[in-house]
Length: 291
Image (cartoon, rainbow, N blue to C red; front, side, top):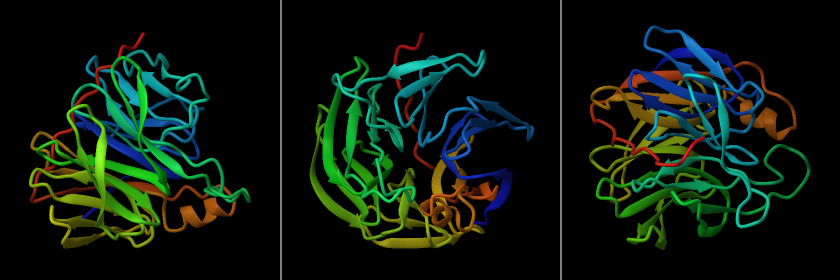
Protein backbone atom coordinates (compact mmCIF):
# COMPACT_ATOMS: atom_id res chain seq x y z
CA UNK A 1 0.00 0.00 0.00
CA UNK A 2 1.51 3.31 -1.11
CA UNK A 3 -0.12 6.66 -0.40
CA UNK A 4 0.09 9.36 -3.05
CA UNK A 5 -0.84 13.02 -2.75
CA UNK A 6 -4.13 14.01 -4.39
CA UNK A 7 -4.69 17.48 -2.86
CA UNK A 8 -2.35 20.00 -1.22
CA UNK A 9 -1.93 23.63 -0.20
CA UNK A 10 -4.21 23.45 2.83
CA UNK A 11 -3.43 24.25 6.46
CA UNK A 12 -4.75 21.42 8.64
CA UNK A 13 -6.99 18.83 7.00
CA UNK A 14 -9.61 16.75 8.82
CA UNK A 15 -12.89 14.86 8.45
CA UNK A 16 -12.50 12.85 5.21
CA UNK A 17 -15.67 11.17 3.96
CA UNK A 18 -16.40 9.70 0.54
CA UNK A 19 -19.56 10.20 -1.49
CA UNK A 20 -19.57 8.14 -4.66
CA UNK A 21 -16.46 9.10 -6.64
CA UNK A 22 -15.91 12.27 -4.60
CA UNK A 23 -14.18 12.76 -1.26
CA UNK A 24 -15.06 15.46 1.26
CA UNK A 25 -12.61 17.01 3.73
CA UNK A 26 -12.23 20.16 5.81
CA UNK A 27 -9.52 22.65 6.68
CA UNK A 28 -9.86 22.78 10.45
CA UNK A 29 -7.87 25.97 11.06
CA UNK A 30 -8.04 27.99 7.83
CA UNK A 31 -11.72 27.17 7.45
CA UNK A 32 -13.86 25.68 4.73
CA UNK A 33 -15.31 22.41 3.49
CA UNK A 34 -14.02 20.88 0.26
CA UNK A 35 -15.08 18.23 -2.24
CA UNK A 36 -12.49 16.61 -4.46
CA UNK A 37 -14.22 15.31 -7.58
CA UNK A 38 -13.30 12.35 -9.78
CA UNK A 39 -11.96 14.66 -12.50
CA UNK A 40 -9.52 16.27 -10.06
CA UNK A 41 -11.46 19.51 -9.63
CA UNK A 42 -12.25 20.80 -6.15
CA UNK A 43 -15.40 22.55 -4.94
CA UNK A 44 -15.27 24.70 -1.80
CA UNK A 45 -18.03 25.59 0.66
CA UNK A 46 -18.43 27.60 3.87
CA UNK A 47 -15.08 29.42 3.76
CA UNK A 48 -15.77 31.16 7.08
CA UNK A 49 -16.47 28.01 9.08
CA UNK A 50 -13.59 26.81 11.26
CA UNK A 51 -12.98 23.77 13.47
CA UNK A 52 -15.13 21.37 11.44
CA UNK A 53 -13.68 18.02 12.47
CA UNK A 54 -16.31 15.57 11.19
CA UNK A 55 -18.54 14.95 8.17
CA UNK A 56 -21.49 12.58 7.66
CA UNK A 57 -23.69 11.97 4.63
CA UNK A 58 -27.41 12.56 5.18
CA UNK A 59 -30.16 10.51 3.50
CA UNK A 60 -31.36 13.50 1.45
CA UNK A 61 -28.00 14.11 -0.23
CA UNK A 62 -27.02 16.88 2.12
CA UNK A 63 -23.93 16.86 4.31
CA UNK A 64 -23.88 16.94 8.12
CA UNK A 65 -20.95 18.86 9.60
CA UNK A 66 -19.51 19.28 13.06
CA UNK A 67 -18.28 22.62 14.39
CA UNK A 68 -17.21 24.44 17.52
CA UNK A 69 -20.68 25.90 18.16
CA UNK A 70 -23.24 23.66 16.41
CA UNK A 71 -23.94 20.77 14.06
CA UNK A 72 -24.70 22.07 10.57
CA UNK A 73 -26.22 20.81 7.34
CA UNK A 74 -24.95 21.77 3.89
CA UNK A 75 -26.68 21.39 0.53
CA UNK A 76 -23.89 20.81 -2.04
CA UNK A 77 -26.20 21.67 -4.93
CA UNK A 78 -27.15 25.15 -3.74
CA UNK A 79 -24.55 25.98 -1.09
CA UNK A 80 -27.33 26.63 1.41
CA UNK A 81 -26.68 25.60 4.98
CA UNK A 82 -28.39 25.62 8.36
CA UNK A 83 -28.27 24.24 11.89
CA UNK A 84 -29.13 20.66 12.80
CA UNK A 85 -28.29 21.08 16.49
CA UNK A 86 -27.60 24.39 18.21
CA UNK A 87 -28.14 24.31 21.95
CA UNK A 88 -27.74 21.03 23.83
CA UNK A 89 -30.41 20.50 26.48
CA UNK A 90 -30.81 24.25 26.87
CA UNK A 91 -27.09 24.95 27.20
CA UNK A 92 -24.40 26.16 24.81
CA UNK A 93 -23.36 23.58 22.22
CA UNK A 94 -20.10 22.04 23.50
CA UNK A 95 -18.54 21.77 20.04
CA UNK A 96 -18.17 18.70 17.85
CA UNK A 97 -15.02 16.98 16.66
CA UNK A 98 -14.99 13.56 14.95
CA UNK A 99 -18.37 11.88 14.43
CA UNK A 100 -19.91 8.77 12.88
CA UNK A 101 -23.46 7.65 11.98
CA UNK A 102 -24.88 5.10 14.43
CA UNK A 103 -26.60 3.00 11.74
CA UNK A 104 -30.06 4.06 12.94
CA UNK A 105 -30.14 7.58 11.50
CA UNK A 106 -28.41 9.33 14.38
CA UNK A 107 -24.73 9.77 15.16
CA UNK A 108 -22.03 9.54 17.81
CA UNK A 109 -19.74 12.55 18.27
CA UNK A 110 -16.98 13.73 20.53
CA UNK A 111 -16.99 17.19 22.08
CA UNK A 112 -14.14 19.67 21.69
CA UNK A 113 -11.80 20.85 24.42
CA UNK A 114 -12.20 24.48 25.50
CA UNK A 115 -8.62 25.22 26.40
CA UNK A 116 -5.09 23.88 26.20
CA UNK A 117 -5.53 22.45 22.72
CA UNK A 118 -4.39 25.51 20.82
CA UNK A 119 -1.69 26.97 23.03
CA UNK A 120 -3.92 29.53 24.75
CA UNK A 121 -2.45 28.90 28.20
CA UNK A 122 -5.59 27.35 29.66
CA UNK A 123 -5.83 23.85 31.07
CA UNK A 124 -7.75 21.58 28.68
CA UNK A 125 -11.24 20.57 29.75
CA UNK A 126 -12.08 16.90 29.67
CA UNK A 127 -14.26 15.96 26.72
CA UNK A 128 -17.24 13.64 26.27
CA UNK A 129 -18.62 11.18 23.75
CA UNK A 130 -22.20 12.05 22.86
CA UNK A 131 -25.11 10.54 20.94
CA UNK A 132 -27.62 12.50 18.83
CA UNK A 133 -30.76 10.73 17.61
CA UNK A 134 -33.04 11.66 14.71
CA UNK A 135 -35.48 13.42 17.06
CA UNK A 136 -32.74 15.77 18.25
CA UNK A 137 -32.28 14.11 21.65
CA UNK A 138 -28.72 14.37 22.96
CA UNK A 139 -27.17 12.26 25.68
CA UNK A 140 -23.72 11.68 27.12
CA UNK A 141 -22.53 8.10 26.52
CA UNK A 142 -19.01 8.47 27.95
CA UNK A 143 -17.26 11.29 29.82
CA UNK A 144 -14.02 12.26 31.54
CA UNK A 145 -12.15 11.73 28.27
CA UNK A 146 -8.97 13.30 26.91
CA UNK A 147 -9.14 14.78 23.39
CA UNK A 148 -12.10 13.00 21.77
CA UNK A 149 -11.26 11.92 18.24
CA UNK A 150 -12.04 9.08 15.80
CA UNK A 151 -15.16 6.93 16.13
CA UNK A 152 -15.83 3.55 14.51
CA UNK A 153 -18.29 0.67 14.80
CA UNK A 154 -17.54 -3.03 14.27
CA UNK A 155 -19.12 -4.93 11.34
CA UNK A 156 -21.62 -6.67 13.66
CA UNK A 157 -22.66 -3.34 15.19
CA UNK A 158 -21.90 -4.51 18.72
CA UNK A 159 -18.66 -2.65 19.46
CA UNK A 160 -17.82 1.04 19.27
CA UNK A 161 -14.19 2.17 18.99
CA UNK A 162 -13.16 5.63 20.11
CA UNK A 163 -9.76 7.32 19.92
CA UNK A 164 -8.74 9.45 22.87
CA UNK A 165 -5.62 11.26 21.76
CA UNK A 166 -2.77 10.99 24.30
CA UNK A 167 -4.37 7.88 25.88
CA UNK A 168 -5.22 5.29 23.23
CA UNK A 169 -8.11 3.67 21.42
CA UNK A 170 -10.92 2.32 23.64
CA UNK A 171 -13.70 -0.14 22.92
CA UNK A 172 -17.28 -0.13 24.26
CA UNK A 173 -20.22 -2.50 24.06
CA UNK A 174 -23.21 -0.97 22.23
CA UNK A 175 -26.66 -1.65 23.72
CA UNK A 176 -29.84 -1.83 21.67
CA UNK A 177 -30.73 1.75 22.65
CA UNK A 178 -27.31 3.05 21.57
CA UNK A 179 -25.91 3.45 25.08
CA UNK A 180 -22.37 2.29 25.78
CA UNK A 181 -20.83 0.13 28.51
CA UNK A 182 -17.79 -2.03 29.22
CA UNK A 183 -15.17 0.60 28.41
CA UNK A 184 -11.76 -1.02 27.90
CA UNK A 185 -8.44 -0.29 26.28
CA UNK A 186 -8.39 -1.67 22.75
CA UNK A 187 -5.07 -0.35 21.44
CA UNK A 188 -2.47 1.64 23.43
CA UNK A 189 -1.74 3.91 20.45
CA UNK A 190 -1.32 7.23 22.27
CA UNK A 191 -0.96 9.37 19.14
CA UNK A 192 -4.32 8.18 17.81
CA UNK A 193 -6.51 10.67 15.94
CA UNK A 194 -9.11 9.64 13.35
CA UNK A 195 -10.02 6.01 12.69
CA UNK A 196 -11.91 3.76 10.26
CA UNK A 197 -13.06 0.14 10.40
CA UNK A 198 -12.67 -2.35 7.56
CA UNK A 199 -14.93 -5.20 6.41
CA UNK A 200 -12.91 -7.75 8.40
CA UNK A 201 -13.26 -5.76 11.62
CA UNK A 202 -9.76 -4.32 11.47
CA UNK A 203 -9.38 -0.87 13.03
CA UNK A 204 -7.23 1.63 11.12
CA UNK A 205 -5.87 4.51 13.18
CA UNK A 206 -4.35 7.76 11.92
CA UNK A 207 -1.28 8.53 14.05
CA UNK A 208 -0.87 12.25 14.59
CA UNK A 209 2.84 12.26 15.54
CA UNK A 210 4.46 9.27 13.82
CA UNK A 211 3.88 9.53 10.02
CA UNK A 212 1.78 6.40 9.78
CA UNK A 213 -1.58 4.70 9.82
CA UNK A 214 -1.77 1.45 11.74
CA UNK A 215 -4.20 -1.46 11.54
CA UNK A 216 -5.25 -3.43 14.61
CA UNK A 217 -7.02 -6.78 14.42
CA UNK A 218 -10.34 -7.19 16.27
CA UNK A 219 -8.48 -8.83 19.18
CA UNK A 220 -6.30 -5.73 19.61
CA UNK A 221 -3.17 -7.18 17.97
CA UNK A 222 -1.16 -4.75 15.83
CA UNK A 223 -1.35 -6.06 12.27
CA UNK A 224 0.52 -3.51 10.17
CA UNK A 225 1.91 0.00 9.90
CA UNK A 226 1.76 1.96 6.65
CA UNK A 227 4.01 5.04 6.26
CA UNK A 228 2.56 8.44 5.33
CA UNK A 229 4.80 11.20 3.87
CA UNK A 230 3.60 13.76 6.46
CA UNK A 231 4.17 13.47 10.20
CA UNK A 232 0.84 14.80 11.52
CA UNK A 233 -1.66 12.24 10.18
CA UNK A 234 -5.11 13.36 11.29
CA UNK A 235 -7.80 11.07 9.86
CA UNK A 236 -8.65 8.20 7.51
CA UNK A 237 -11.65 6.88 5.59
CA UNK A 238 -12.54 4.21 3.02
CA UNK A 239 -14.62 4.63 -0.14
CA UNK A 240 -14.93 3.97 -3.84
CA UNK A 241 -17.16 1.47 -5.67
CA UNK A 242 -15.53 -1.47 -3.88
CA UNK A 243 -14.71 0.43 -0.65
CA UNK A 244 -11.01 -0.27 -1.21
CA UNK A 245 -9.97 3.35 -1.81
CA UNK A 246 -8.33 4.82 1.30
CA UNK A 247 -8.01 8.55 1.95
CA UNK A 248 -5.83 10.10 4.64
CA UNK A 249 -5.69 13.73 5.76
CA UNK A 250 -2.71 15.46 7.39
CA UNK A 251 -1.66 18.65 9.12
CA UNK A 252 1.74 18.57 7.44
CA UNK A 253 4.93 17.82 9.38
CA UNK A 254 4.55 20.20 12.33
CA UNK A 255 1.01 21.60 12.14
CA UNK A 256 0.10 20.33 15.61
CA UNK A 257 3.19 21.80 17.25
CA UNK A 258 2.69 25.18 15.56
CA UNK A 259 -0.98 25.15 16.55
CA UNK A 260 -0.07 24.39 20.16
CA UNK A 261 2.13 27.50 20.13
CA UNK A 262 -0.95 29.53 19.25
CA UNK A 263 0.22 30.15 15.68
CA UNK A 264 -1.28 29.34 12.30
CA UNK A 265 0.53 26.49 10.50
CA UNK A 266 1.69 26.93 6.93
CA UNK A 267 -0.11 25.47 3.89
CA UNK A 268 1.37 22.01 4.36
CA UNK A 269 -1.76 19.93 5.01
CA UNK A 270 -2.40 17.32 2.34
CA UNK A 271 -4.87 14.65 1.24
CA UNK A 272 -3.45 11.24 0.26
CA UNK A 273 -4.95 8.23 -1.52
CA UNK A 274 -4.06 4.54 -1.66
CA UNK A 275 -5.69 1.22 -2.52
CA UNK A 276 -6.24 -1.38 0.21
CA UNK A 277 -6.21 -5.15 -0.11
CA UNK A 278 -8.99 -5.20 2.51
CA UNK A 279 -12.15 -3.19 1.74
CA UNK A 280 -13.51 -0.75 4.24
CA UNK A 281 -16.80 -1.13 6.04
CA UNK A 282 -19.51 0.95 4.33
CA UNK A 283 -20.59 3.92 6.47
CA UNK A 284 -24.30 4.47 7.08
CA UNK A 285 -26.14 7.72 6.33
CA UNK A 286 -27.75 9.91 8.93
CA UNK A 287 -31.46 10.71 8.72
CA UNK A 288 -31.84 14.25 10.02
CA UNK A 289 -34.40 16.79 8.89
CA UNK A 290 -32.61 19.58 7.02
CA UNK A 291 -34.50 22.69 5.99
